[in-house]
Image (tube, rainbow, N blue to C red; front, top):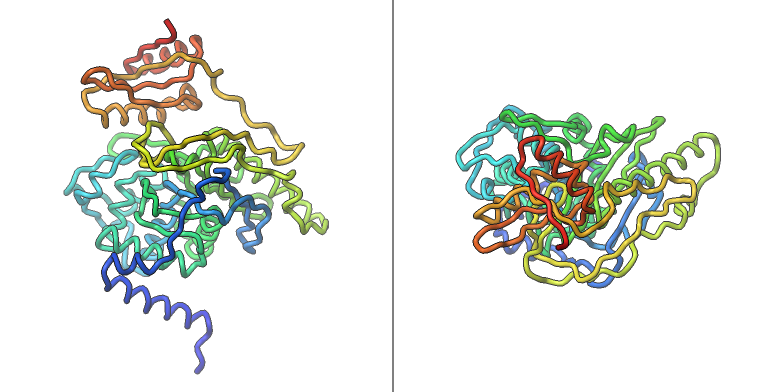
Length: 432
């Protein structure tokens, strides 16, 4: 009996996986190709893929390496789903939180070392709240250590054909070696849909309640744009605002990945417009039109504006969808305009407030991490008021002030009134 090529490939991959997991982390990582984000190139990248066939309908710098941030967690999900499907893992299994998992920076569920959580709740926390501690806990539970799980991630990436990807950790926290691309992420997302549709529901959860607290999904297109049912957001200062999204309409499923947007609002608008154009192409084909050069139907889109230089620097301040406020890389320049998908597509939504030089302070703390956590929590809880504001942590003597900047006076007072009404201390200030 002659084995099929697919079976041979799977057996070979299993042998390689076992061999690499058995060797040292340093050796395994050294065998992977070195990848680097281009030093000077427009930061934004995007791709639109037909999930059924893998056809690329639109691509803009989609194979250029970028920092994936929390979109990384899609691979952590894939390996968890693989373990669930094989019976090595069960949704009701209890995961013990290690000191490393407990020490992960926000966003996280905040369990202490030694506490336990079910696999199902850990996956939901990772999907909805993008919990960095849950990603690490799952990684250690499956792989034993973070480094061994990273080896598993990289081997799976190679097996799936993700040619511009190198993972270092399971949650996407900043590391200059932690690289992927829009195309690779689309390949990974298609693999999740194809291989483990029974577990895809985790990406569709709009809310997750745990220990008396309810978290909203960081993917704000869920419940807003019809057909969108996943997948994952990400943000760090170095990465920009990322979104890996998937949607279904009229029997067609599309995958859209946008990396490096300068804001969450622009990212969401870009993804929405790309989905609308992609579905329009599929509808035309259903009506019998012979649409082949789909790239042209996206209106000659050029994502991004000025060239962005990423250089090593000190920890920078910022706030994002699901990742820590501090990052190890800083931007030297960043200017970009919204996607012009086509002349008939809806324009980007207006900003929540006109930019100004007033600020809103939502707390003062003795420790900098507490101030950061407050910025992240308030941004998440009061999205409407702070969607287009910049979160910062300012020092004043031995105190750290959690602030949002960029308001007009009227917008600052309105935002402050909204948070104060919910019991959050608030103050406003501006030019004197």
